[in-house]
Image (cartoon, rainbow over all chains, first blue to last red; front, side, top):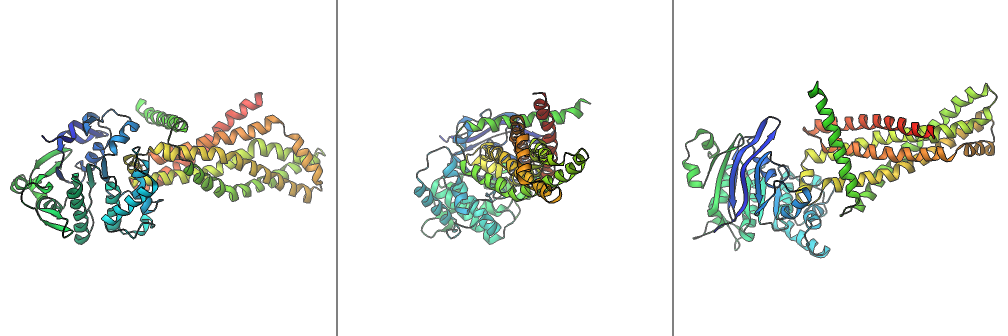
Length: 268
Length: 251
């Protein structure tokens, strides 16, 4: 019996008079991978922030790890948010902190015991080595390229090994090689830690990669899905239009869809 | 008409909400003492040169102006009294506060505003820190400590500036100037001279944070927030000044 990690029930978020999310309902089950697509302004980023309790819905309720977060105060939300890692659209690294301090930030500040300073340092190094940036510890975000910042963002989002990770546009504006590297890290994290993953991306290649490939620990690369059950087989494509879900389903259905708006996102 | 009034009232309400949170945080954990010290350094030590410079010049100007006015009554020897009273009661606190508002309310608003538009504030919340606790309260505490100190320094440098004019132009001796200056100051003068910067500090820090945290609309928004913070903080410094002066005048 799969258990729901994130539940939206009839959620509406308005900015002024226009709804950014319009009576939205869905469930994300543990172990699933969601590829969230949609035109600019269709509500993808608002959905991510509402899921974390950063934006409070005007109507409806949001459940995160079985807890209703709709009416919770900021301080009550901290322990629940600690179970969720998020990569923001523009990475949102803290300019005034070094890369190591940025990655250590959730370990030091989330009100859950995360061990001594030595243990934190070891975890930070491990997380940065995971995204192949082990040599940037003492640098500042302004010294890194866009792709590297995105990778630091991933390290910061996953350093606590959260059961749910949300990546808001991890590959937007990057060259195909860097984008591929980043998707490999996300797939690796999904495979090694069994992370439920929500990816906002309009590149259909990212979705195909997550649906058709699995991380292979022996080669440290992505390979075709192995026989039997694996996280990639629980990949779902979701297309949003004007605050509503226009399509949700597995790859086979997504490729067969005839709706002109939805099928545009499936074109390579 | 009602719609026209709604926006400023809403803004006022939000400001008081933020103020309440900032004060409540003083009594709650976690406390970010490192940030308080950093801000003291940035705002206090950083403002020292400009505050001393302006303090010195205002002392010089006051001595020049007063010497001319009071020499008509043959009271040029009392220059120290006038310089001391105007500086300690009024010019020291207000000028220092205006400079600090110009320098630091803008700094706070633009720093927090940039963090807001680059989603760093959201990231902070997502990663387990309350931005009001981490950003606002430390700035408020730091400024409440350093602004009275900066005012004392401005007052002192101003008195020295006044002495320069008294000695060079009016041939008043050092003991005469300093004795008359220090004797002229009562508890009332010193109390209002220190209470004013203490209150101004809260207004400047909170207004800067308030406009920073509600920044929207990219880099243009940051510029707008910065300007608003300086203008509003300066206006509030004067409004508060009237109230505090009114109370002390009646005492």
